[in-house]
Image (cartoon, rainbow, N blue to C red; front, side, top):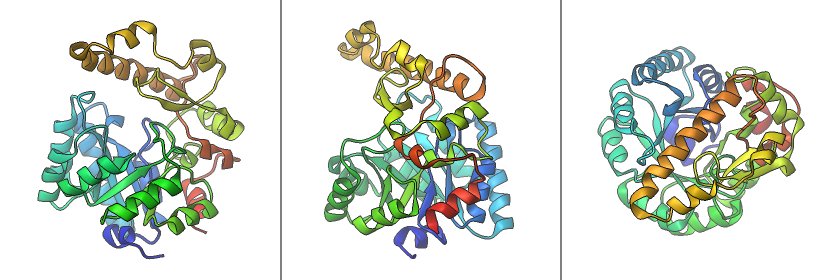
Length: 317
């Protein structure tokens, strides 16, 4: 199928392997490119900017050898990510096909990326922000709906896609609610020109996470996904493990109180983001009772740990 997304990124299928904190890596994205789709990695998956540069160089070499597909990076562009400008500069210098922005204004990213020929897609959950990023020059919007994993939106896939298609002229890429080819086809039928899919790839052989995390995506289902404020201070979907049940889903009362103070709110958010990211990092990479595993309801279709190529095949047919 040809859409504006496949034309823009020179893809065989209108599919982006979504950026997932601690999960996405070079091996997964390279395998995705071999399948003719795009892959994206969070810049925060790399401890240093030099590590980020190295991954971009590796993916450029992989793409040249493979001869198809595209790769990009996700940037958190608000104040919770003090490395954002250094990461952006590195990506613009090393080169990639696209950048996906999240949680802040993409204005600086769009200007810098476009200057070197990099496309910019922006996460949005509503029409107001979608129109803002289109006015800033975004190349597409990632429409994050209420079935997405991680930080999700409030609108259903159908409502959000149709709303954005009606009022925006740039391509709409739907994020959330896709775990099968039928679901991918449905998003395209609503008017999306591509889909961004994450959770089905958690239980991939190439993912650099524990077998326990992967197996949890096999054993748990959509009904086991809950929203917690304890990762970033903003509701985020996780698997409802016994540890998550024990600590609860709301932020501690002291944080909720401090968040009401305009001067302190930024620092409280940064502290919660740091603590939450560390907790998910430990759970993803080590055997621990503190199991905070981020995932979306589309893990309902995950029945086994499989190679990326098999997961892509199940989505595109």
